[in-house]
Image 1 (tube, rainbow, N blue to C red):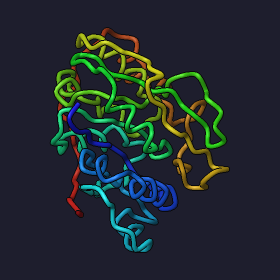
Image 2: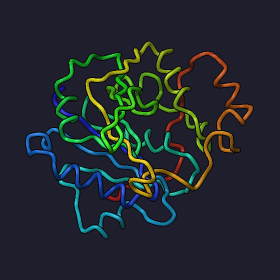
Image 3: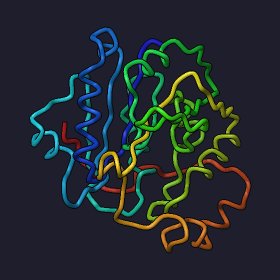
Length: 241
């Protein structure tokens, strides 16, 4: 792998963003030269990413594109990732959540992997205290941009609902992609006890009205065969940086 793009969807996470900026600054120059970032602010109503970067007075030390989704759509991280992937210029990308960090030693491990086209890799998770969870994160994927679009990206019919990651992986399998959990690298996962705004709190998750399985149309999709997503990026957006 020659170089890599980190894909992140931001939603009112200014303190977590600062933690990412600090980590990127700690990457040695040889790694900074091989990494890019595409960050999408998913309609943050209180603390947009551009304001957060200005407030911290800390520009990203690696090449970064910043986009903002104009409407505030609940649980639109899939759409935000589609927008990011439309603007990835490297062959490989690592898509992960804002509360997952790639430290410099694990970034080096990524570059040392023997990666293959047609396969996406799901890393192990480690808590901030060093405890390994010994399981992959269900929504973090190291994959080729071409493979991502071979399945149509994310199905934005799920926008407004939580719990679409399983459907994404099912459709990836239907597109002939191979899922590969790996311990070759790990992300550090942050909880609210670590950084208060590490993850989204505006809407419910499982066992709430926001869960995809409570929507009969989406439940039928989940129960059907794999399919190719269509019509990505259905919302207004602007480039900020």
